[in-house]
Image (cartoon, rainbow, N blue to C red; front, side, top):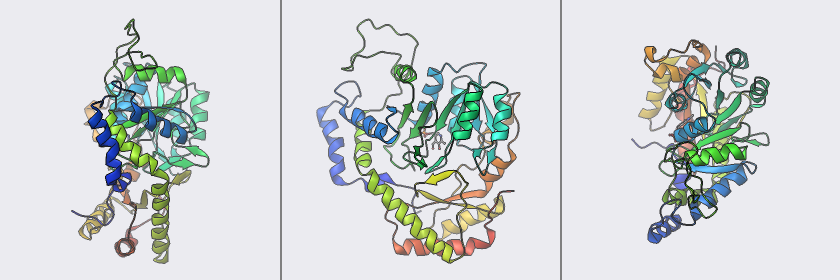
Length: 385
Ligand SMILES: Cc1ncc(COP(=O)(O)O)c(C=O)c1O
């Protein structure tokens, strides 16, 4: 099915001359991060670091791998539990399960995204970490979440897989937690097929993560393993390749133009929608890259029908994540004694739909979207109850 608003961003700006970086890597036969000077991986990490107020950046094979490696490096494992936004993609929780720990869901709040009341309760049980999740193209202000974590001496990780380059005030997604993870998978701002990046505040933590994603090896400046080959803790291979990094490089070099294009396209769409009496539903405390517009429907049936109606009219309207993470698991898997259903998060998951606003939307695409959303206006609501 071809949509007038496909969920693709930076990859739409890949042009023939960007392929030069990729071809150079292949021609050089140095496709592996540590077989050469790893110029593309290093260039990409430096470009990302400069966008996250200088935090060190490390490319990894996926967003899920990034969360897993961070938890491993923090020593999170069996008998631990980790507080996670209930409203997130299954991967956030799966990464917690993959290190042997239990994810405990925390409810949604329209003002702060993560419910501070519920988080305070969960923090009282001493989780090993808190993972706060940003929405597509948005960065939530985590000041209060961070304050609560600091008071309880619990480390805060940002799952910013959907929010590379998003900001709130002067702070970028990835700059509020001890570590943060981005994804470069499909439907993300920039993409290289599969891939991710970890940014961290502390150099010791980053050093442990770097070793974990590279079989536990320590390397010299030139990229060779330390001569003694002493592995402190076993790791895995979660590295990104030079080929993937070269694809990201071209997109990063054009990122500012992409962001401007997205902001302009979305604001034109919002102006036209508001002329039809339609407003986006956007929780507070977040600034937005213009990747998607968000709408809240009266109930799940209305949201599903809206999605179908839009699809029949070649407009893509889709759930962010169709269920809370714990609704994705069979009930018997979910056995943490701290478990509580998160009713607001369940309501948001079932009733919110996003409308991608890709770069270079044409006037006719915007008109088509406006016509569809105008038909759906009677089913839109402004507040989650
Ligand atoms: C919130 C969130 N966390 C984690 C991930 C996992 O990222 P990846 O697919 O790169 O492993 C995603 C992917 O979309 C996501 O949306």
